[in-house]
Amino acid sequence: MATIRERKTSKGETRYQAIVRLKGFPPQTATFNRKTDAKRWVTNTEAAIREGRHFKTTESKKHTLSDLIERYIKYVLPTKPKSQLKQAAQLRWWQSEIGYLTLSEVTPARLGEARDKLQRGRQPATVVRYMAALSHAFTIASNEWGWLEDNPLRKVRKPVEPRGRVRFLDEEERSRLLTACKQSDCESLYPVVVLALSTGMRQGEILSLEWPHVDLVRGYIYLSDTKNGERRTVPLVSHAKELVLNLSKIRRVDTKLLFPSTVKPQSPVAIRRPWGEALKAADIHDFRFHDLRHTAASYLAMNGASLAEIAEILGHKTLQMVKRYAHLSEQHTSRVLESMNRSMFNG
Image 1: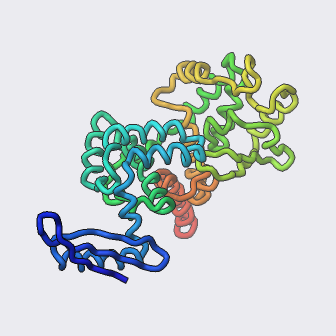
Image 2: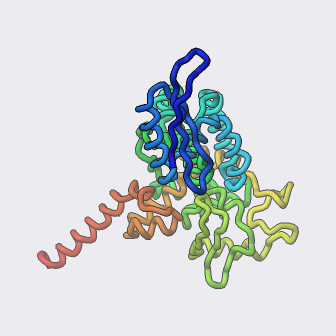
Image 3: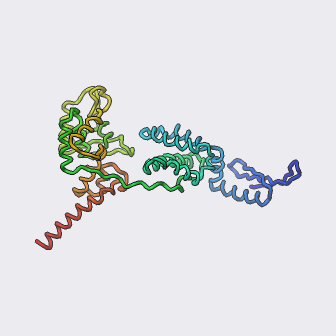
């Protein structure tokens, strides 16, 4: 039900007070100079309330972007421990730039201006991460808190990220690197590198491995603390399994870790220095530990594994991340097809 009342000001001017009352909702009022504006407001407000839009619009005028970020950091980020510190820093940047704006003032245009400033001196991939952090905060504020009608960052163009890097070891490099790792004064380096090459596991996943998660009888490693938050089972086979089996025979009793620090058994071994020394000794350049993961994926592709199989082994939720290895799989397919045709038509 709506009511429009005509009122006179102290100066004798006419004003129109519109009141909207709908059962189950608090009354809404607004005052206008013209009756036509009051009628239009009544119609729009009644429709917005019935569709669940009105109070979000009202809330967006009550809260600033800074309010949103503070609440998100306090209540949402603690549920994301792996990215908590990094995303908090990213959100603080947005807060320092446009945190004073009310949410109703945070338009795609204002966000675009901030994005342009963010891009100065930063790589496109970094800018995308900053935008992703804020975008999730907007989504929570819209879907769960009712502070926004929609996520305004949806309409802001993201910078184009370069194609993913694919650097992998050729056979000679792999042989030299493994030899250098064997000769390292860090006894853990060789089995760590072999695990990375044979399973595609990340460095953090390997160094945080605990014995209760290793099944030597069935030949599996069970990962519960992965980057994407999902559990993953990794087959343990061949040389990697032999190395882990040997480690189990001499494992320490004061820690659950497969690769504990000799100084602090409850912490993983530090491999940064010995890894760098091994790369230098093997004369390998422009290569990071994470590229061992690329190497494993590349070898899988060249040995006929499908993109779906590679994604499953590496723990990717979608095929998008493994499309970078498609050309290697295609080369393998071409060789197989060529061999088949030779046997059919030249045999």
